[in-house]
View 1 (cartoon, rainbow, N blue to C red):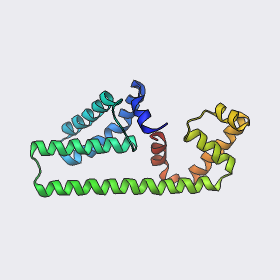
View 2 (cartoon, rainbow, N blue to C red):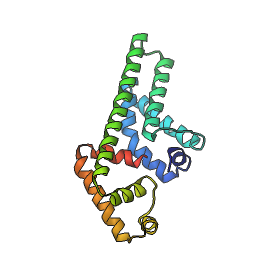
View 3 (cartoon, helix red, strand yellow):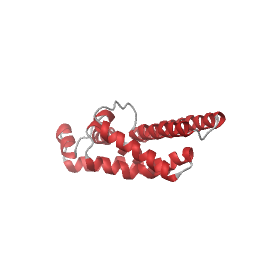
View 4 (cartoon, rainbow, N blue to C red):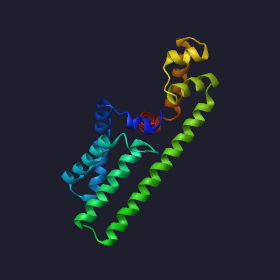
Length: 184
């Protein structure tokens, strides 16, 4: 399922989960700009309200996480501009910090994707196919079993093999990987 479809079809339960998962890190991010915890919370709250209200109109090409951080960044900069709390030099430093954060985030994501691909290339072709059908296409085990003409138990075995290899080869990135997989 693509990101646009995910955003436009967000139900209340999924939105609440997204909010709970991202509120604290986004608030910490906004706080670095505005240096006021109440204002940082307000900025993040506004971003989520706008996301909920405009979810059917938002044309998102990247990850939800990237969209949220970019939105919080922009609102924080608008807050600073409107309240004139930074000098021009401070504003330049904030923009440089933002560029560095974005650069690091995308480099980390690329590095993780390369490790995921390398790990998937080490497992059996059938286990890789089952994993990709489940994760990339969002198919249920029964659907995969029917499409590949194998038993559900065999699908479970292939998924178990793939997940075990991913856990073993990517343990230092496990938390970040799980976050990325859930937000695809």
